[in-house]
Image 1 (tube, rainbow, N blue to C red):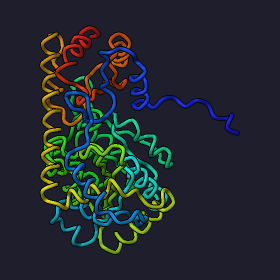
Image 2: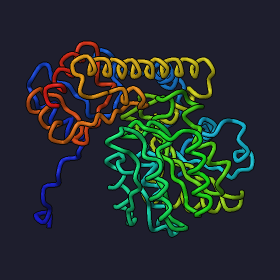
Image 3: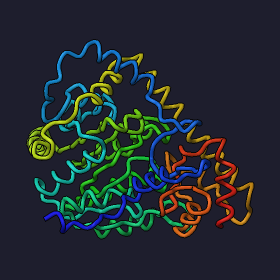
Image 4: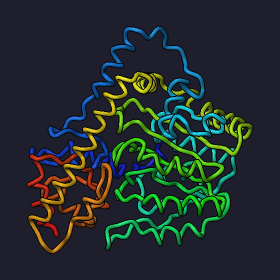
Length: 396
């Protein structure tokens, strides 16, 4: 029976990393994978995490299963982090959170719940979006629709196009929104534009599903949660899939969460019971270690401050490399204005390079990036910036 299987194409992002590792050139550059890296291309364990893990080794007493919804202290801390400790929906118990295995797991749980338990059938994605979004929701069974998001000529958010396309959505459709640091473009709506989107979802009875993978990488934790918190004040129902891979640098621990907001306590509890049934059928209950690390850090004031300081350092380094890239590109050529890269936010930049130019960079210079021209800014450092800018200039 297995002979029926054909070779699947390589994942557009993870497959790129495999090609990078197979490249024998010593001066190769990996700008594809979305992980934070230091000046020396390391992705270290955060000090707050190290201290917490040492504490857990000494004090953890059991490895029993968690409940279906996961570690209770973790879910409480995540809810407060995303919505703020004083949000009314928390006290009213209209907002419930379950632990999930990473952001991808959270998105899949949300998709299975919305399709099989709520009856949603159409889901709208931004064009472009993270490469795995479509695969996740197509696997669930959703009919996929796209809304305009980015103007490649002007290198900015196409908000008019976004509104125009979402006006075609129908009541009961799901709209996937990036909470901040849009992947891959780095272009986010303004506060006023988020407010218009909330009004549109309310008026057309659309269900917002936020993907929150980069909180803390744009302006700060509270600032980056603006859209989530504003929508919660405006719409009766919404969902959030959250990941701590990036902002806690816990990539291989798969630490995420899925939250739902309902119009009242009864509906929230009923819906959450169905969400738990989805989880039970998928993976029964989540892994404990990463969630216990995050919960402990968020609960302990000193550790939380240490983590936030480390996150600030990460955010500032990415901003510095973004500015360095703009300066370097503008210094080696004059026919293009790359100031738009400086206005983008988060880990990625939509460079404007064509797939052909990306292929040239990989073949000629050993510079690896996603075919769309998305650059992982964290892969840039002071040692490779000269080669990077000179190589980009050579393919323009």
